[in-house]
Amino acid sequence: MPIKTTEIRDTGVCIPDICFGTSALGNMPETYTYEVDERRAIDTITSILNSEYAFIDVSRNYGMGRSEERIGKAIKEFGGVPENAIISTKLDRNMETLLFDASEARRSLEESLTALGVDSVDILHLHDPEHASALDPIVKSGGAIDELFKMRDEGFCKAVGLAAGNVDVMMPMLAERDFDTLITHNRFTLVNTNAEKMIELAVERNITVMNAAPYCGGALAKGTDTFKRYVYQEADEETLAPLQVVEDICAKYGIEPGAAALQFSLRDPRIASTICGVSLPERIEETIGWASQKLPDALWQELLHLDRDNSNPEVRREFSSG
Image 1 (spheres, one colour):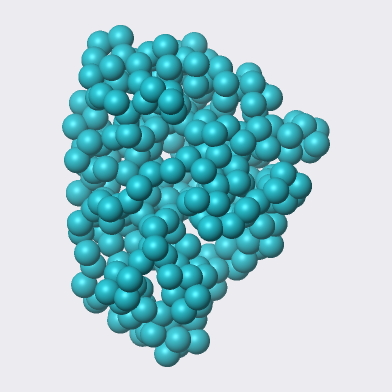
Image 2 (cartoon, helix red, strand yellow):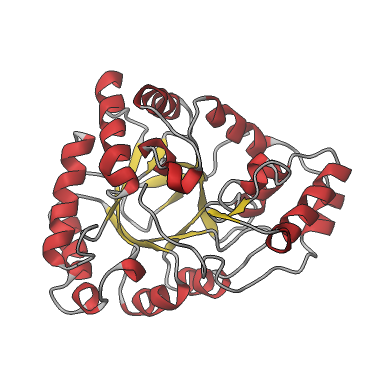
Protein backbone atom coordinates (compact mmCIF):
# COMPACT_ATOMS: atom_id res chain seq x y z
CA MET A 1 0.00 0.00 0.00
CA PRO A 2 1.54 3.36 -1.02
CA ILE A 3 2.29 5.77 1.79
CA LYS A 4 0.01 8.78 1.88
CA THR A 5 1.99 11.97 2.47
CA THR A 6 0.97 15.57 3.09
CA GLU A 7 3.12 18.63 2.65
CA ILE A 8 2.84 21.08 5.52
CA ARG A 9 1.89 24.24 3.67
CA ASP A 10 4.89 25.38 1.61
CA THR A 11 7.51 24.32 4.17
CA GLY A 12 8.89 21.45 2.10
CA VAL A 13 8.13 19.06 5.00
CA CYS A 14 6.10 16.11 3.70
CA ILE A 15 4.77 13.94 6.48
CA PRO A 16 3.51 10.35 6.14
CA ASP A 17 0.11 9.40 7.50
CA ILE A 18 1.65 7.48 10.41
CA CYS A 19 3.96 9.01 13.01
CA PHE A 20 5.42 7.27 16.04
CA GLY A 21 5.08 8.86 19.45
CA THR A 22 7.94 8.33 21.90
CA SER A 23 6.78 9.52 25.30
CA ALA A 24 6.81 6.00 26.78
CA LEU A 25 10.42 5.60 25.63
CA GLY A 26 11.41 8.13 28.27
CA ASN A 27 10.44 5.61 30.94
CA MET A 28 7.20 7.04 32.38
CA PRO A 29 5.75 4.26 34.57
CA GLU A 30 3.38 6.61 36.40
CA THR A 31 1.71 7.32 33.06
CA TYR A 32 2.07 3.97 31.26
CA THR A 33 2.33 1.48 34.18
CA TYR A 34 5.54 -0.13 32.87
CA GLU A 35 9.26 0.58 32.68
CA VAL A 36 11.25 1.09 29.48
CA ASP A 37 15.02 0.78 29.78
CA GLU A 38 17.46 2.62 27.55
CA ARG A 39 18.37 -0.32 25.30
CA ARG A 40 14.74 -1.12 24.58
CA ALA A 41 14.08 2.53 23.80
CA ILE A 42 17.06 2.82 21.44
CA ASP A 43 16.11 -0.40 19.65
CA THR A 44 12.57 0.89 19.20
CA ILE A 45 13.78 4.20 17.78
CA THR A 46 16.16 2.36 15.45
CA SER A 47 13.24 0.30 14.16
CA ILE A 48 11.33 3.52 13.45
CA LEU A 49 14.29 5.02 11.60
CA ASN A 50 14.61 1.83 9.54
CA SER A 51 10.93 1.81 8.62
CA GLU A 52 9.10 3.45 5.74
CA TYR A 53 7.45 5.68 8.35
CA ALA A 54 10.54 7.32 9.84
CA PHE A 55 8.53 10.07 11.51
CA ILE A 56 9.23 10.61 15.22
CA ASP A 57 7.27 12.81 17.60
CA VAL A 58 8.78 13.72 20.97
CA SER A 59 8.79 16.52 23.54
CA ARG A 60 11.28 18.11 25.90
CA ASN A 61 9.36 17.01 29.00
CA TYR A 62 8.74 13.35 28.09
CA GLY A 63 10.40 11.47 30.89
CA MET A 64 12.00 14.76 32.01
CA GLY A 65 14.15 14.76 28.87
CA ARG A 66 14.95 11.04 28.69
CA SER A 67 12.95 10.46 25.50
CA GLU A 68 14.97 13.05 23.59
CA GLU A 69 18.23 11.83 25.08
CA ARG A 70 17.52 8.27 23.99
CA ILE A 71 16.48 9.40 20.52
CA GLY A 72 19.76 11.29 20.33
CA LYS A 73 21.71 8.17 21.26
CA ALA A 74 19.80 6.13 18.70
CA ILE A 75 20.51 8.70 15.99
CA LYS A 76 24.21 8.62 16.89
CA GLU A 77 24.28 4.81 16.73
CA PHE A 78 22.45 5.00 13.41
CA GLY A 79 25.11 7.26 12.00
CA GLY A 80 22.97 10.36 11.84
CA VAL A 81 19.40 11.26 10.91
CA PRO A 82 18.35 9.30 7.80
CA GLU A 83 17.50 11.41 4.77
CA ASN A 84 13.85 10.34 4.84
CA ALA A 85 13.39 10.87 8.59
CA ILE A 86 11.27 13.64 10.10
CA ILE A 87 11.84 14.81 13.66
CA SER A 88 9.13 16.71 15.51
CA THR A 89 9.61 17.96 19.06
CA LYS A 90 7.95 20.42 21.41
CA LEU A 91 8.81 23.41 23.56
CA ASP A 92 7.86 22.92 27.21
CA ARG A 93 7.34 24.98 30.32
CA ASN A 94 9.76 24.90 33.23
CA MET A 95 8.65 21.70 34.97
CA GLU A 96 9.51 23.07 38.44
CA THR A 97 8.08 26.59 38.30
CA LEU A 98 5.56 25.94 35.46
CA LEU A 99 6.60 29.27 33.93
CA PHE A 100 6.30 29.30 30.15
CA ASP A 101 7.62 32.54 28.72
CA ALA A 102 9.99 33.36 25.86
CA SER A 103 13.12 32.57 27.84
CA GLU A 104 11.74 29.19 28.94
CA ALA A 105 10.80 28.43 25.34
CA ARG A 106 14.36 29.25 24.26
CA ARG A 107 15.81 27.08 27.04
CA SER A 108 13.55 24.22 25.97
CA LEU A 109 14.73 24.47 22.37
CA GLU A 110 18.40 24.53 23.32
CA GLU A 111 18.02 21.50 25.59
CA SER A 112 16.14 19.61 22.86
CA LEU A 113 18.78 20.23 20.21
CA THR A 114 21.54 19.19 22.61
CA ALA A 115 19.73 16.01 23.66
CA LEU A 116 18.82 15.04 20.10
CA GLY A 117 22.29 15.90 18.80
CA VAL A 118 20.95 17.97 15.90
CA ASP A 119 21.17 21.58 14.78
CA SER A 120 17.47 21.85 13.87
CA VAL A 121 14.26 19.85 13.68
CA ASP A 122 11.58 19.64 11.04
CA ILE A 123 8.60 20.57 13.21
CA LEU A 124 8.51 22.43 16.51
CA HIS A 125 5.37 22.70 18.63
CA LEU A 126 4.43 24.75 21.64
CA HIS A 127 3.34 22.12 24.14
CA ASP A 128 0.64 21.91 26.81
CA PRO A 129 -0.01 25.60 27.55
CA GLU A 130 -2.91 24.55 29.80
CA HIS A 131 -0.41 23.19 32.33
CA ALA A 132 1.61 26.40 32.57
CA SER A 133 1.34 28.69 35.59
CA ALA A 134 -0.31 31.37 33.44
CA LEU A 135 -1.26 31.89 29.80
CA ASP A 136 -0.24 35.54 29.52
CA PRO A 137 3.53 34.84 29.26
CA ILE A 138 2.71 32.47 26.41
CA VAL A 139 0.33 34.58 24.33
CA LYS A 140 1.45 38.16 24.98
CA SER A 141 3.62 40.13 22.56
CA GLY A 142 7.17 38.86 23.01
CA GLY A 143 5.89 35.73 24.75
CA ALA A 144 6.50 32.03 24.15
CA ILE A 145 4.45 31.85 20.94
CA ASP A 146 6.32 34.79 19.44
CA GLU A 147 9.56 33.07 20.41
CA LEU A 148 8.39 29.90 18.65
CA PHE A 149 7.83 31.79 15.39
CA LYS A 150 11.21 33.50 15.82
CA MET A 151 12.83 30.06 16.05
CA ARG A 152 11.36 29.18 12.67
CA ASP A 153 12.68 32.44 11.21
CA GLU A 154 16.10 31.61 12.63
CA GLY A 155 16.12 28.23 10.89
CA PHE A 156 15.79 25.98 13.94
CA CYS A 157 12.70 24.37 12.40
CA LYS A 158 10.76 24.40 9.15
CA ALA A 159 7.24 24.33 10.59
CA VAL A 160 5.71 25.48 13.87
CA GLY A 161 2.61 24.26 15.61
CA LEU A 162 0.50 23.88 18.71
CA ALA A 163 0.29 20.56 20.58
CA ALA A 164 -1.97 20.29 23.60
CA GLY A 165 -5.06 18.74 25.04
CA ASN A 166 -7.53 21.30 26.34
CA VAL A 167 -9.61 22.45 23.38
CA ASP A 168 -10.87 25.55 25.18
CA VAL A 169 -7.29 26.77 25.65
CA MET A 170 -6.19 25.84 22.15
CA MET A 171 -9.02 27.27 20.05
CA PRO A 172 -8.27 30.98 20.67
CA MET A 173 -4.58 30.43 19.92
CA LEU A 174 -5.41 28.63 16.68
CA ALA A 175 -7.81 31.37 15.67
CA GLU A 176 -5.34 34.17 16.38
CA ARG A 177 -1.97 32.77 15.30
CA ASP A 178 -0.84 31.38 11.97
CA PHE A 179 0.44 27.98 13.04
CA ASP A 180 1.53 25.46 10.41
CA THR A 181 0.48 22.38 12.37
CA LEU A 182 -1.73 21.13 15.17
CA ILE A 183 -1.48 18.05 17.37
CA THR A 184 -4.55 16.95 19.29
CA HIS A 185 -4.50 13.82 21.45
CA ASN A 186 -7.13 11.44 22.87
CA ARG A 187 -9.85 13.70 21.49
CA PHE A 188 -10.59 12.15 18.11
CA THR A 189 -11.09 8.44 18.68
CA LEU A 190 -13.73 5.75 18.25
CA VAL A 191 -15.24 6.82 21.58
CA ASN A 192 -14.54 10.55 21.82
CA THR A 193 -14.69 13.48 19.38
CA ASN A 194 -13.97 16.39 21.72
CA ALA A 195 -11.58 17.87 19.12
CA GLU A 196 -14.10 17.89 16.24
CA LYS A 197 -14.68 21.65 16.13
CA MET A 198 -10.99 22.34 16.63
CA ILE A 199 -10.08 20.08 13.72
CA GLU A 200 -12.61 21.93 11.57
CA LEU A 201 -11.08 25.27 12.55
CA ALA A 202 -7.61 24.02 11.70
CA VAL A 203 -8.71 22.80 8.28
CA GLU A 204 -10.38 26.16 7.58
CA ARG A 205 -7.10 27.89 8.43
CA ASN A 206 -4.97 25.50 6.35
CA ILE A 207 -3.29 24.12 9.46
CA THR A 208 -2.03 20.55 9.05
CA VAL A 209 -3.70 18.29 11.63
CA MET A 210 -1.98 15.42 13.41
CA ASN A 211 -4.10 13.18 15.62
CA ALA A 212 -2.34 11.46 18.52
CA ALA A 213 -3.36 8.61 20.81
CA PRO A 214 -5.98 6.83 18.68
CA TYR A 215 -6.00 3.92 21.15
CA CYS A 216 -7.30 6.04 24.05
CA GLY A 217 -4.07 5.77 26.00
CA GLY A 218 -3.51 2.13 25.05
CA ALA A 219 -6.84 0.55 26.00
CA LEU A 220 -7.99 -0.23 22.46
CA ALA A 221 -4.59 -1.67 21.59
CA LYS A 222 -4.14 -3.83 24.67
CA GLY A 223 -7.72 -4.77 25.53
CA THR A 224 -9.88 -3.70 28.46
CA ASP A 225 -10.05 -7.22 29.90
CA THR A 226 -6.56 -6.75 31.30
CA PHE A 227 -5.80 -3.06 30.75
CA LYS A 228 -8.38 -1.19 32.78
CA ARG A 229 -7.21 2.32 32.05
CA TYR A 230 -8.48 5.15 29.89
CA VAL A 231 -6.45 8.17 28.84
CA TYR A 232 -3.56 7.28 31.22
CA GLN A 233 -5.77 6.91 34.31
CA GLU A 234 -7.35 3.96 36.09
CA ALA A 235 -10.89 3.55 34.80
CA ASP A 236 -14.09 2.06 36.23
CA GLU A 237 -16.49 -0.15 34.29
CA GLU A 238 -18.73 2.77 33.37
CA THR A 239 -15.81 4.60 31.76
CA LEU A 240 -14.65 1.47 29.94
CA ALA A 241 -18.13 0.51 28.70
CA PRO A 242 -17.93 2.46 25.38
CA LEU A 243 -14.56 0.88 24.63
CA GLN A 244 -15.99 -2.55 25.34
CA VAL A 245 -18.78 -1.89 22.83
CA VAL A 246 -16.08 -1.22 20.23
CA GLU A 247 -14.27 -4.41 21.25
CA ASP A 248 -17.48 -6.47 20.95
CA ILE A 249 -18.19 -5.14 17.45
CA CYS A 250 -14.63 -5.83 16.34
CA ALA A 251 -14.77 -9.35 17.82
CA LYS A 252 -17.86 -10.09 15.73
CA TYR A 253 -15.83 -9.48 12.58
CA GLY A 254 -12.57 -11.01 13.82
CA ILE A 255 -10.81 -7.63 13.78
CA GLU A 256 -8.41 -6.36 16.41
CA PRO A 257 -9.74 -3.17 18.00
CA GLY A 258 -6.35 -1.53 17.54
CA ALA A 259 -6.67 -1.81 13.76
CA ALA A 260 -10.11 -0.21 13.79
CA ALA A 261 -9.01 2.53 16.19
CA LEU A 262 -6.02 3.41 14.03
CA GLN A 263 -7.96 3.35 10.78
CA PHE A 264 -10.74 5.51 12.22
CA SER A 265 -8.16 8.28 12.31
CA LEU A 266 -6.35 7.33 9.09
CA ARG A 267 -9.52 7.30 6.98
CA ASP A 268 -10.48 10.87 7.90
CA PRO A 269 -9.27 13.21 5.13
CA ARG A 270 -8.78 16.04 7.62
CA ILE A 271 -6.09 14.10 9.50
CA ALA A 272 -2.70 14.31 7.80
CA SER A 273 -0.90 11.98 10.22
CA THR A 274 -1.89 9.76 13.13
CA ILE A 275 0.59 9.58 15.99
CA CYS A 276 0.83 6.15 17.60
CA GLY A 277 2.82 5.68 20.78
CA VAL A 278 5.21 2.72 20.74
CA SER A 279 7.58 1.22 23.28
CA LEU A 280 8.79 -1.98 21.61
CA PRO A 281 10.48 -2.51 18.23
CA GLU A 282 7.83 -5.01 17.12
CA ARG A 283 5.08 -2.40 17.56
CA ILE A 284 6.29 -0.59 14.44
CA GLU A 285 5.53 -3.56 12.19
CA GLU A 286 2.29 -4.22 14.06
CA THR A 287 1.14 -0.64 13.55
CA ILE A 288 1.92 -0.72 9.84
CA GLY A 289 0.06 -4.02 9.60
CA TRP A 290 -3.01 -2.59 11.32
CA ALA A 291 -2.93 0.39 8.98
CA SER A 292 -2.85 -1.74 5.84
CA GLN A 293 -5.42 -4.33 6.93
CA LYS A 294 -8.64 -4.38 4.88
CA LEU A 295 -11.58 -3.93 7.25
CA PRO A 296 -15.08 -4.94 6.19
CA ASP A 297 -17.63 -2.28 5.28
CA ALA A 298 -20.12 -3.84 7.69
CA LEU A 299 -17.71 -3.18 10.55
CA TRP A 300 -17.53 0.50 9.66
CA GLN A 301 -21.30 0.68 9.34
CA GLU A 302 -21.55 -0.31 13.00
CA LEU A 303 -18.58 1.63 14.33
CA LEU A 304 -19.40 4.89 12.59
CA HIS A 305 -22.95 4.88 13.92
CA LEU A 306 -21.88 4.66 17.55
CA ASP A 307 -22.62 7.60 19.81
CA ARG A 308 -19.37 9.31 20.77
CA ASP A 309 -18.68 11.45 23.79
CA ASN A 310 -17.63 15.01 22.98
CA SER A 311 -16.57 16.12 26.45
CA ASN A 312 -13.00 16.54 27.67
CA PRO A 313 -11.71 12.98 28.26
CA GLU A 314 -8.93 14.19 30.54
CA VAL A 315 -11.00 16.29 32.90
CA ARG A 316 -10.01 14.08 35.84
CA ARG A 317 -6.46 13.36 34.72
CA GLU A 318 -3.65 14.06 37.12
CA PHE A 319 -0.72 15.02 34.93
CA SER A 320 2.64 13.34 35.50
CA SER A 321 5.88 13.64 33.56
CA GLY A 322 7.04 10.26 34.89
